[in-house]
Length: 127
Image 1: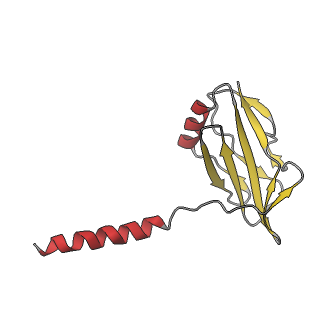
Image 2: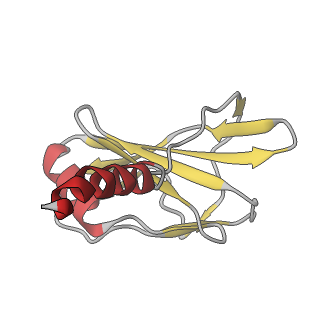
Image 3: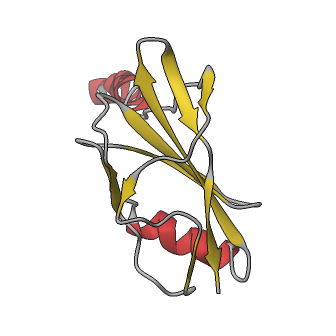
C-alpha cells in the first residue's frame, strides 16, 4: 500500500528532469548581411526528394551556432558541434515529405560579442 504514495513523487521528479533537457533556439538580435561560408557549398541548390540529410560545417568556427530548418508547414532546430551541423534523420525525412516540390529555408545563427547574429537565409529546392 505504501508504494502508491511514491508514484506521484517519482512522476514529478521525472517530469522536472526531462523538462529541462530540451534546448531551445535563442533569439537572434542582429543580421549578418551575407550568406554563411559552409562546406560543402550547399547554398541555394536543388536536391532530390529522397536524399539523405545534407550535413555540413561552417568554415569559421564560432563557439556557438544553430541552424533553423523550415518549410511552410514544418520546422526544426539543430545546434552545431564544433561548427558542424548534423541533421537528424527522422526530422529530415518528415520535412522532405512536407516540402515535396517546394523549398526548405535554412538560417544559421552564430554567437559573437554582440550576441546572436543571423546570416542571410539560403534555400534548398526540392525536385
